[in-house]
Image (cartoon, rainbow, N blue to C red; front, top):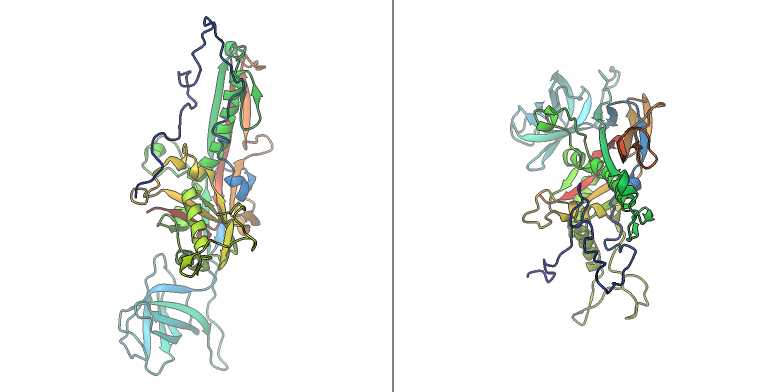
Length: 472
């Protein structure tokens, strides 16, 4: 069934900011030779409401200074030992067997003589338990099975093995060898973000009849005030969206050849090191059970915030509302969430702020994903929207990491921004005025130029605890 909401007329993306004065930006129909004067509203009507989209990082993160071109940190590895690509060289029924570990990236196994292991056939689920009697090489180990029937699966069957303890005879020596902790080292580099607004001295002296206003409260009859303040607001939005969307410049890319480094934004990191839901929006409890099951295998953070676009928000609301549906006499009845004295004159709240399913999930609309001038204007239909992002699950709270610059463990929010700063230079948010107008006296340019600069990057700690919702 086609949507009843017609494609035309639609939302408007113009007038918008332009580098030059265009017909779509300024009123040109002043005709004071007409004997009839129109009634005019002096103040600009704010038909798009609050147009800024920045708020996400302020809600979930923090900002802290850095003195280097690179930020490095170490994240904990797993405590226990498990391999999932293990094959036996012995036949079914053998009392002992030598296994080879072929897991990607494993060059030296952490299995020692005397440890007890469980070995399971990945396909059938049948398993053995055994004790390690020898470690012949860096990637092989020999076990003696506890079961009288011996090995429960055929030769060369792909298996999973994990260590659950150890056993030694009386009067024997202790464990041979020790294990070193394994850390994952991650890094990111800040990027320089700039913007500028310029107005000549003559236009600064031109009064207007339209009273302009911006989201930060600036008002006046001078048009350049509006443009300057909107440049500032736009720059502040870019400080956030650059941290969300940034990607590193790949080797051999045009950006790399031009000397650019890029940076690892939140979406890039979660796409590569986090969890990705590729079905657009989870619409049922079974979908969320799959997500909860994955989170169980990651950090198992108790509280999480889901930043959603409108589609995912509605899908969650609909899913939760259906859980309370009931019938009476074969007729579907209305929902009874809320107070028990609901009546027809009450406004029914059809939205939910969160739910608990294994963990606590709090839902928050993300304006960036809804704004038509940003990601909200991208194709959002399942058939053609490969890569379109519908939401992001962010763990709440902070985590402990080893900061290699500070040289010690530190508590950090899962998401936080690092900006360049020292005693002599703070590049968190720089703004300065040049030219010879508007109070500036730095050059003979008959204009005022307002410059903006920041140097920053975002650190996504524990990306394995994040979930990105997207199509494809």
